[in-house]
Length: 357
Image (tube, rainbow, N blue to C red):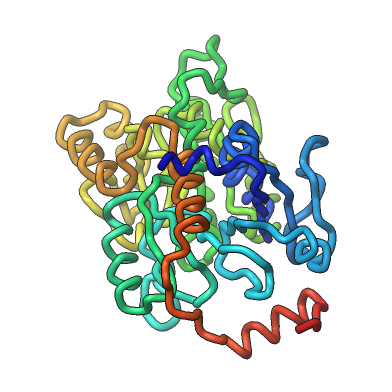
C-alpha cells in the first residue's frame, strides 16, 4: 500500500516550543498540504512567538482547541508532548546527535521520555541505537526516514539570500552553542575580532537563540563590511551560502557538513576524523585555511561520516516521514502502553492549565 496517499483528509499538528522549530517543520507542512492533509500549529510556552507564523498558517491557541480538533498525528521537534492530546505522537528531533552528554553522563539524544509512539530517525548511526531502545521499551516504533528539515538543503532550486556573487572572497560561517562550557563565543572573541578586521573572508555569524545577550551584543558590535551577524529562525540559507564553518559542539555543524563542506571546530566535545578540531585560538586561522583546500583524506572522511549520519540527498525525507506516520495510524501495531510519567504529566497540565481527565 502507498501510505503517502493516505495523507489526504488527515489532520497533522505541529507542536513547538522554540522559534527554530518553524523552519524544522515547514518542509513537512508543505508535503502534507501537497498530499491533501490539514496542518495546524500549537505554540507551547513563552520561548516561542507567533510572530513567525505566516498568513496562511493556522494556529490553535489553547490545548482545549487542540483536543477538540483531534489531530491524527502530532509532530514534535522537542522532547515532550502531553499524553492527553489525541493521535500518535512523532519525535522528529531539533537537531542531530552532536555527542552532548546530560547530567547523568548519557547522550541526551537517546533519552527516552515515554512521550512518543514513533521516532523518525535521520540515519544509520542513530537508527540502530533507537531500534535497540525500541526492543527494550516496546512502547514506540522506529523508522529511518531522514530529517525533513533538510529537504530544501538538497533542493538545487533553493536559493540563499546571503550569497553575494560580486564578492569573490570565501565565506566563513561562524556558529556557536549557548552552553558556556562548550561555546566558542567567549573564548574566541579576540580571534574573531581580528578576522573581522583582516577582511580575508566574508564572515557570517549566527548563534543559538539561548546565547546570553551580553555575548550577542559584543559580537553585533563587530559588524562591518567583512562580518555580518544574523538572527534568523531558518539557518538553511546560511548553510548554503558558506564555504567553510567554524563551530564548537553545536549540532548545526552536522547540518553544514552534510553539504560535503569542511568544518573547523574549537574544543569539540567529540571530535572525529570528519572535523578539523583545534584547542588553541592561535591555530584557528591556519585550520580554516587548511579546510578551504579540501584535503582529500578529510573529504573522504566527511563522505563516510555523512553516509552514517544522513545518507539521504534526494530532498524526499518529508515524504518518508509522512508515509511512516500514516502506516502507523493505519496498521495500529500493538505497542506496549507508554509509562504514566505522573510527575511530568502533572507539570505539563499545570503549565498548560488543563485539568480535564
